[in-house]
Length: 293
Image (cartoon, rainbow, N blue to C red; front, side, top):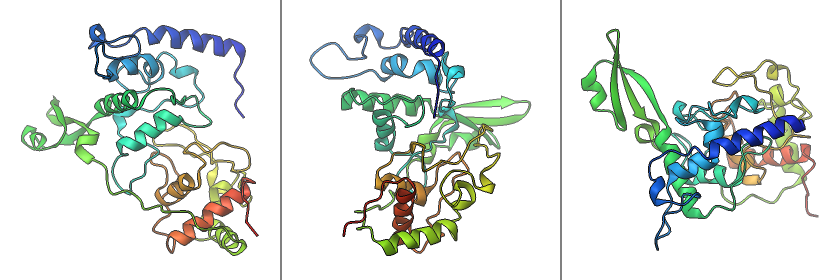
């Protein structure tokens, strides 16, 4: 449970309000304050929308250093790292639809708000701008090698070492989507199988604990890829960050959560039936399972 004091909320509101007025200058003259282009065509400027809704936390260049970032309980995503937690693809970076879903629904249990009221065209404009910020660097042999990389932005030489600054989405792309399908009808036998897998080969209990309280021995002192302490989800109390639909839980089990210690279990399980069994056992731990008679 997150407790936010009134003074903190007030300060955060002031910071966010002040940063919203500092949208990037590009395209401002042809758009209104919401990033909507003037004229008949319903076009939106992603940089203006980003300045209004995202800048205060994620920062101008997307590294998560906005003026409000230090006041948040969860550090904002660093887009330049090219690591996104929630995706629907087996390999590669999330699809545009994945990014749009995060913007529209937000991330439960964090300060990442839901922007369900924005029209689809505005959401897409934001998605494209976020993707344009996902620029990081990799070491290369020389400038000639760098020129062959998709998404190359520039080549940097530092003390004889060459680095290519690349757009991660253009370099890596998105892979094939995970086939989720329609959730099967839950049964008592399926839930029992889920418990067996949860405590056994899938090793969920080592971090989440046998009863799902997030108190497993292996879950102590965990850190994400940025070195930030992270705790396993307490299924009996916590909101699921990646969404609490059955399909959302299925994806997290099969694909894991990049940038965190939460591994992908798809290759450990015997197939979709095993994954759905764990889904329903997790729902039982969350006290949200109903088995029709």
